[in-house]
Length: 114
Image 1 (cartoon, one colour):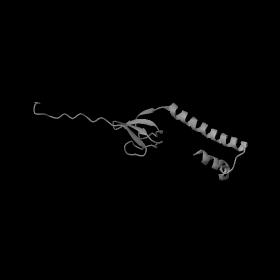
Image 2 (cartoon, one colour; image 1 turned 180 degrees about the vertical axis):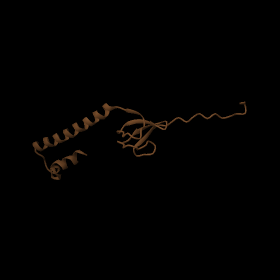
Image 3 (tube, one colour; image 1 turned 30 degrees about the vertical axis):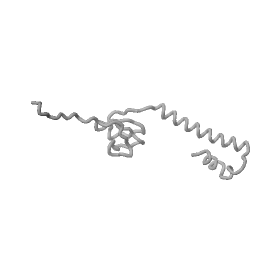
Image 4 (cartoon, helix red, strand yellow; image 1 turned 120 degrees about the horizontal axis):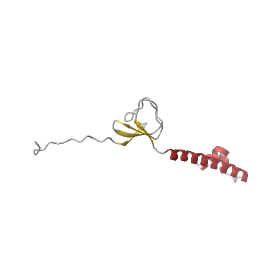
């Protein structure tokens, strides 16, 4: 939400068309400061958590957004909170492929091999 939208929400559209009083200015400043502090707390929480590796994906478990699991030999990251049974590779709106599984090496026979 922009500062203008927040001011319109808090004080109405007319507040932007006239000179505001000092008290109104400080009320608006308090509202903006509160919004910034709330966002700052959310960012600190997200950054402090880091990557959470949960091991192999298990059908019976829900996963939080940002959780990393392995499934079918690949690494997957949850894009949102998931419910039980949302399988990586099948629930594409819930999981992001982070690292592909390695393909097994295939040996080709050449004419020189016996």
